[in-house]
Length: 209
Image 1 (cartoon, one colour):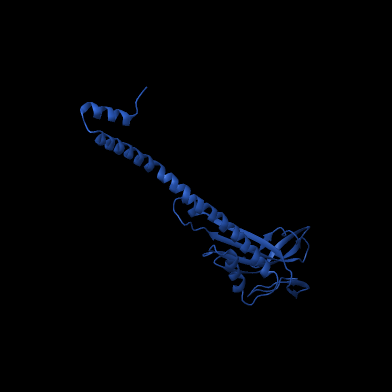
Image 2 (tube, rainbow, N blue to C red):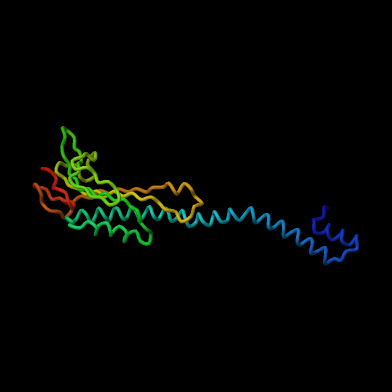
């Protein structure tokens, strides 16, 4: 049977007349050196796994909170005209807490559904922004949002964009991640304008008839 290295070291010590304690110390040092090398290989993997258990769930949670904040802003904006839209913007951070939405870009749009030929299209009536670019008044958004497919329907749309800021730099791909969300909400408690109940965002005008 092949002897392990510590046993061979002790055998050589006995043969050469060395004290057994000295041989055992040398054998322990050899084992300690091997353990240090093994740990040097394993430590980076352990650190990476530890960081991943923090960073990845944080990124997912931030994206989820951004979606919830977007829904909240669309919901609030659909209920009334606001002279100070900052109250709606502030609600987003409250919903997202404890995750930060620093640097968020927000576009709130009040729109209407119009008939063009035999089809319907959603158009911008008024739009405001924070940290982004507002939609051009009168521009087409696209097909009418769900629940607003009839001529004259009014809606509010919230769009958000957030560049994710990771806590650690171990995952370079997270440095280029940008989360986006969009929510459309039918007007629920607006003001009658041109025969339709709608929301007019600050600085904007009612939707054309």
